[in-house]
Length: 212
Image 1 (cartoon, rainbow, N blue to C red):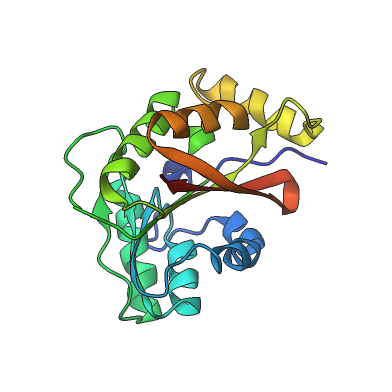
Image 2 (cartoon, rainbow, N blue to C red):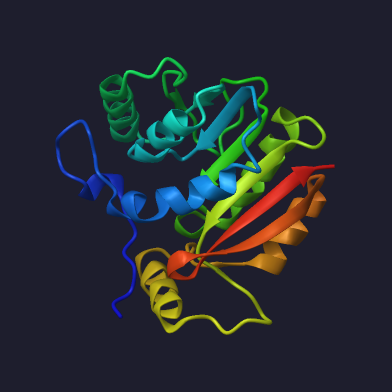
């Protein structure tokens, strides 16, 4: 089996609506998990929304929540806006420019946060900033949902994920698959506890943390 490929905004073409192929493969499995994560009402902030395809899909499935996309890349913001306009859903807010490591996020609170496939294509400092800001934005009991490939010391890592990890580190030594135990420790240091770990297709995991 060939290794997965990271989707990078600068490789996605010139049309406003960008397409991340993995979204079509994983969005329904993620949505199944989100049934226990998405609040009945309130604002769901997605960090690193990428093309915007995920949040458009989720907004259609959970119409009573208000969905707030964000990204640090202008081309991604354009793609999110284009997909949102095509969907015509009133519960998708205009995308916010958020660089996870920069202070002063342009949002004061959220009822839930999602971050899909970011931790392994960003430096560890981005994960630290994510939990720090989540502590600021979320109320006690509110969820932070993470999805992507991870490693665990007590579970054999699939060869495809090992190959993917090596490929990521060859692109940027600060990237790579994160250890679940390290993410758990980081979460605890920012006032979160892991509520669930769910095995997902294609050797990915869903990690659900809740603010203490």
